[in-house]
Length: 288
Image 1 (tube, one colour):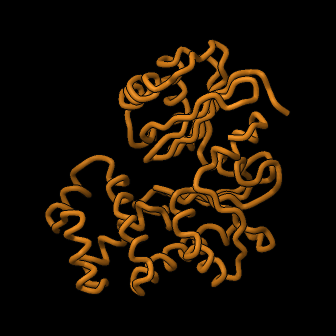
Image 2: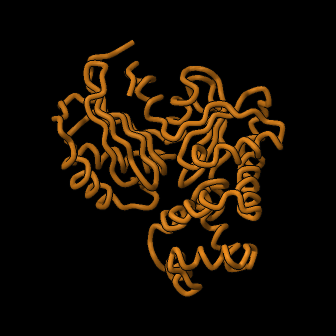
């Protein structure tokens, strides 16, 4: 059922954030800013993005009673949710601000109000069992150092490791190093001494897409997605449910993801690049 109350629906990952203003059951503006993640960014940085990227790009005035529905990476506990909520209230001057994990957003976008397995494969990765209303089981993602199997950050990390540990053909390794102007020294500096390492690692994945038919790269991709499914999804013990996925990596490497699932006897369901269309349908019954 469509609603007349204004809604600002937000899907935020570590790399980018999609914002959609809905009024009278229709989408009146969609825009994008850099990613917001309270695990990696301070409240001051988040406020700066809202002020200088979001507010400056808004063409419509947000009504005081606008309902903000924010789904975000790093919003897995109440402390993180409160940090994001407080910044939005201050910068945008709105009081009705709901903040949820991006995983619930993925489940609602992919499954609607039906039971299902929902996965996020983007800069980070996550998965859950969803009963049509709430997340009822979740194997923790643990971030790109301890987990995030199949994510762009981990794919980039694995690519760098394979490069320096001579697991790639020499011509491909040389092409990669030249393309990104990398050396052992610059990589160690970027990974261990500079901020937002996950974005740096994620920025390397286009190289994998361009060379996906190279046997070593194909093995890296299928192996990473197999690891994601094995270490996470299998634990939900619902072999009859298809696996729905959303995110840039799921969309870009759909064929390798399906190959990994088939190798484990699993069935892939819907694969979307972005959850926003599904979230708009869920919350306002409108089409993006």
